[in-house]
Each structure stands twice: as C-alpha cells, then as structure tokens.
Length: 280
Image (cartoon, rainbow, N blue to C red):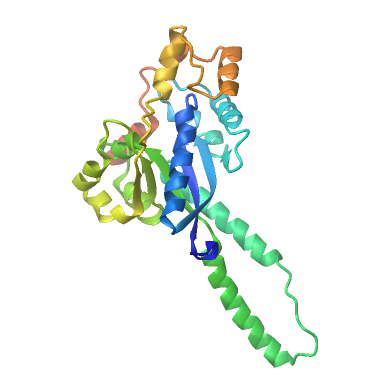
C-alpha cells in the first residue's frame, strides 16, 4: 500500500510525566512500530502533553519543570515533540478537550496550506471552462483536505485505560467520544489484562475496533512513582530516565519527601469537577 493510501496518525500522550521516564518514550516507539506494521497507518508525529498544575495530583511538581524535562528527553527525537498548551491552562482540561484541541490545530494548519497554495491557470482557456474547472478543483481540494489531515489518537498505558472504570474520574460521554471519534493505542504492561477489561466494558467493546492493544514483549516496569521513590531514598535512577533528565532533577533537587506531600489532602481535579456537576 502506498503512503498516500494510508491514514496518517499523530500519537498524543497526556499525563503527569512526573518525571518523564524511558518507558514513556518507549510507548511512542512501540505504538509507531505497531501502527506502521498494520499497513493501514503511517505515524507522522508524536506529542507529549504534560498536565497542568490544576490537576492537583499528589506529588505533582510545577508544570514548567515537567515540561522542561520532557523537552530534554525528546531533544534528539526526530518525530516526538512536547506541546505546552495543556500545561499552561489555568484550569484542568479533560483529555477529550486536549485531543480536540490538537485535531482542530491540525485541521486549521491543513486549511492554511490549502489556501496558501498558488492556483496556476493555463493561458488561452475559455472563461466558462475555467470556472467549471475551478469548481471541480475546489470540490477535489475539499476531499483531499479531509483525507490529508492526520488523525489524532490517544497513546496510553494499560493503567490509563483501566482508569475509565474509576467512579467519577471520567465522564461516560467523554470515554465514548475518545474511543469512537479518536481511537486509543494502549501499550500493555505485565499484570494487565487489557482485553478482559475491554470485554467487560460495553462502551469499549462496542468500539473495540478503534482500540489498538500493543503488547510489550520486552518487560519494562519503569514508572514515575518508582522513580520518585528511589530519589526520596537517595538511590540512583540512571538508565531509568534520559541522562539529561537525571541531571536536571539533580541540579534542581526536584523530588523529596516534601515534594511528594504537594497537594496532599486535595481532591483530584476531575473528581472535584465531576462530583460537583453531578450534584447540580
């Protein structure tokens, strides 16, 4: 299948990235290999979108540090980049809104390219024929524009997918739109039975064709939580995070017992919002 016939995909990973780890970066590589290997997709870009401070997760250090670490981690990547839009929002943004923001951004960019493309007319053509040709070209242009815009898909680990079942953490309509309108690339971890979880959820089962489960055969159990624990205990995190990230953490003394108590006792933003909306 030629590249022009494949659906171009942008992988979007939302999360705390507190801190970003080598496993986060591996998710992108695994998902890219899987999707490209189907012969139906071509991954053109990966986006890391750190959550804003308003998320209020326990132990969440300021967003500007997490963004800088993500930028350092992707410094040498040719296709994965960091986007700051979500991290700069004063209020917490639902994942669905972040997906929508990036899809609309791609569509707007594609529209600008279409409008800025020069239209060349051959001399000596009759005006009526030219007008008909322009109408035909405009219709073709609209069709091409729709096909040409890459599709944003949510890249995540099994823990995020399973969090769909946590009461008041996600709006049911958001889950439906995420899996139906965008799609999910879920990379499994040891101990997660993602297929069983999909089977037990009516919504996920209905849209299972839009959920791509990627098996990680090379066991990698690195997590941000374990990284922070090691740092609190004065243990080495080398080879668990990129070297530049390790240096940044050490230079700014980012993780400690004090930082882990940040937002302690504060209700997580989604739980606050969804619970409040349920009462109104």
